Length: 96
Image 1 (cartoon, rainbow, N blue to C red):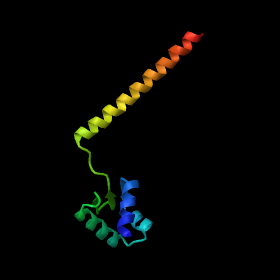
Image 2 (image 1 turned 60 degrees about the horizontal axis):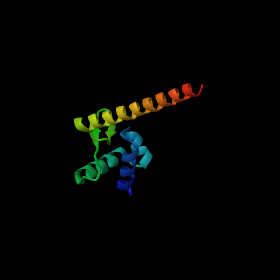
Image 3 (image 1 turned 90 degrees about the vertical axis):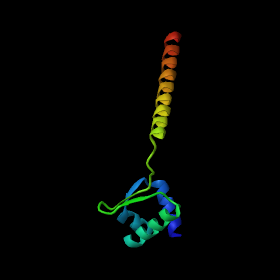
Image 4 (image 1 turned 90 degrees about the horizontal axis):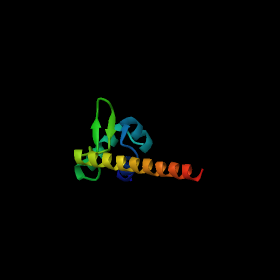
């Protein structure tokens, strides 16, 4: 049950304080760290624990190709919105 809850938390949080996650899951911080470490070793979840700052990061770093692909997709969506807006403005001007 604990590992399931950690997996669910990893879906909702990219970064969270270890004490807060332990509080949400009703665990002691040491027990939470053991469970996360075990899950990372088994490959069940991606996580990095920053002990001095007490931060657990669940988001895997993106490759430069993935970042560029996401950026290109966002730009494409933006240009589509601009084109649609321009079309609607021109259509409105023609009806006047």
